[in-house]
Amino acid sequence: MGSRDLGCQSDPRGTVRQPCRPGSSHGPCVPRHLPFPSSFLATTPGATLASVQRASTPSKEELDEATARRLEKRGYATQLLLDGGLRGRNGYQLWYQARLPWRIPSPDSVSLLTATLPTEYLELHGPMRVRELALDMASQLRFASGHVGLALHFYWMLSAMDEPLRAELARYPGIDLRTAWLPPTRLGTRVDGVHWLNFLAQPVLGQLGGTTALRSRILAPETTVHELDGERVIVSLGESPEAGDLSTGQTLPAYREFARLLEPWLEPLRISEQSWSGEPPRYSDMRFTENEARCWWRRFLD
Image 1 (cartoon, one colour):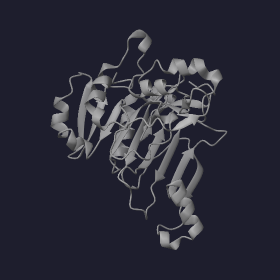
Image 2: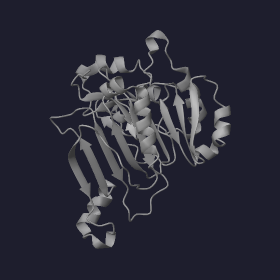
Image 3: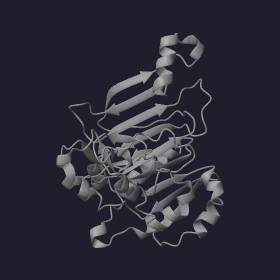
């Protein structure tokens, strides 16, 4: 199914960010947040090289002053983007952004790897295949946290004419709209929300008491905790991603339970990131009011 050209596209993603939505803007994704740059191996079907930006050398001393200043200002040294190109968007995307290698990272600085699949891939191959891809990628990364689930991919901010779509999206708590904000490059050891597949590593896993303690605190029968190794786990909230629907009472109780468990470690909303100068102020590419932004951010907690 294709998506309406409203400046957004749904896909399955992960970080490996693979929430994407099928047709109705629903789909799976896998995001991963890496505390340090890490090599990775990923295959993205149908992708073409859109842009590659990287510092010519890893040493600041070997860069001319203008180049070093430019990299310092933008905040990263390497950016890799693989997608279908401006006129060939096909729902597949791989995006990697690494922190500056010569700078001692601040406690909240992270490198990001995001992979996106179109909803059609989920429908054709099934959720188990998406899960296998996520596990394969996770096995090759030194991640701090990550996730896979349904997400909305934004190419530009929604307009006032898209108000019906914006209101409709708010009905589905399982669709990740975090992508409407700036990338979480200051995530630190926080966790970027609750999703279908949730990858946890140190220090959060240790602060939760480890794998056994985490498993004992979960009551939802559809939630499983699978240990990847002694330091990392994947928490699956069901056999497949769910969008939910508040209008019919589908509040996704397993997601709500896990969100309450993770609440002390969840990424806080930075409401100062205003993206619209009108009255009242609007935030993110969804053009949320402040109250709407707070409600969406805490949709599994309140």
